[in-house]
Image 1 (cartoon, one colour):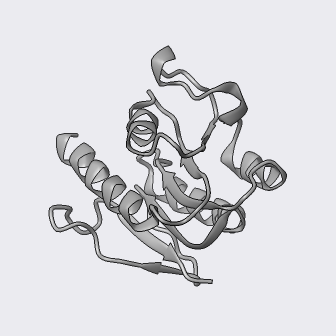
Image 2 (cartoon, one colour; image 1 turned 120 degrees about the vertical axis):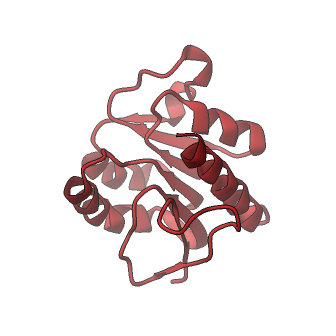
Length: 157
């Protein structure tokens, strides 16, 4: 667990650095207990962060404001958010894994189109699951992150 959290932090910090000059909000898919959201809002306090979560149950100090919390299944809420989130997002952190590889691969496939539509060209996508999207180019992980532990992409078109 410690290695996973260290990898996540290194990838988040790398991603934030890559998009710091681009205007636009961030997306957090999977609130969980709110640690990553809390880290992102401390790292980028001037950014709007839209959080997608099926059933929010984070610590009250780690909850987004209601106007930035989008509740429900990713396969439904990402599409509905297309009218809500303007301008397009420059960073998406996807913590969507269930631990069941086949389920996780299918979810990544199902949400990739709508997630892509929410992102600006040049956006960075980081995820605990691999995505297969033709216009997302994988890039190297931070030096201290093992291959396959996390995945990072740049939206190129």
